Image (cartoon, rainbow, N blue to C red):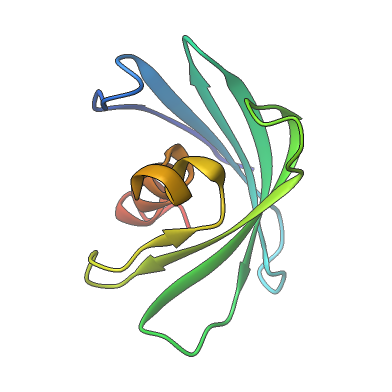
Amino acid sequence: MVKCIEVLPPSKSEKNWAITFQQAEGDYSPICGTLRVQSKRSDAEYLVTEFPTGWVGRGFHLEKIAGGTDAESEAYDCFVAKHGTQHTCDCRGFTHTGACKHIKSLVALIENRWV
């Protein structure tokens, strides 16, 4: 298994944050691996599974393994648009602001070709 780490650019809500991604073993599983999102405010770990969509982009299910800032939510469904204009996530942050750590983390995973 390959472990990848990246410090992400500051955002409005997080000045210092990073992601760690541990790729899953096996070529034929929809499970991509585990994603850890660390910042001053929170530390959360997710199991990342890709699912097919009918849109131009990629769909991901993030199942919370540990931590996070929303104790009520156990998982999030995210869509990362191919051209970067119509990303969506069903988390509270994205619903309120149109941006979230889940989408930013998934975009980084795709740009780095980790998924």
